[in-house]
Image 1 (cartoon, rainbow, N blue to C red):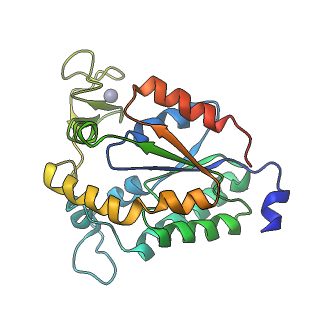
Image 2: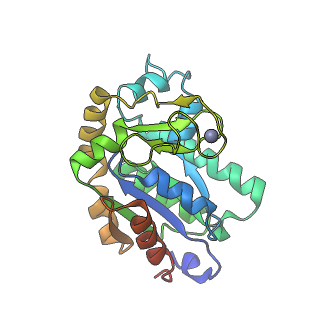
Amino acid sequence: MKAVKENKNRGKWVVLLGAPGCGKGTQSEYLIASDFNFKVVSVGEILRHNKDTIVPGQIKTIGELIGAGLLLPNEVVIGVVKLELEKMNSIIGNISDQNIIFDGFPRTIKQAEALDELAKGFNNSINYVINFEIKEDVLFKRILGRYKCSNCGRIYNDYFLPTKVSGVCDVCGGKVFDRRMDDNEESLKVRITEYYKNTYPLIDFYKKSNTLYNVNADDEFEHVKNCVLEILNKECK
Ligand SMILES: [Zn+2]
């Protein structure tokens, strides 16, 4: 609506799109630490913190659905994002002025439409959608090789970004690492199928709103990072 365009100080509200393992999580970590001072709404993180909660209307827990690689019901995910935005708004003030990354959301057209509505409610809009394009074999290595320091949370990968000293975190020296519960081959196949069925159509959805930017995510982290920065340094339309 018009009110959105009149707000000149509005922050960059960014959606990162891409198949599981495309590297968007690592890029968003970089962006959060960058001069853009991004806040992140990581739906995956929030849901993993609530993994023992039963999914409304179902007999399985959130963790069981994620573990099987399945998408959660739209209402659940949309509700989580709405709560998170309201929480941020009450803690840090007017979030319309903040730069925000949405990681792992939206994953369906319904969620994308809901996000547009939510953004409008906060007097902003999704103004950048960065689509990480990746080849399937690279994707499997990214996902299956990924692990994380249990102490500081730094993300590593067996194939692309191992610790400098085997088994020791570069950042904090920690020796315990987590592999995410859904990082196994079987659930990966389900996740990729879900991605192409439900999330891939978002590329067309955002093309129509003229906010879509494609990045070749097969490249080295640094190169992908620079492409993303170049996109974000452009003024919003
Ligand atoms: Zn660490």
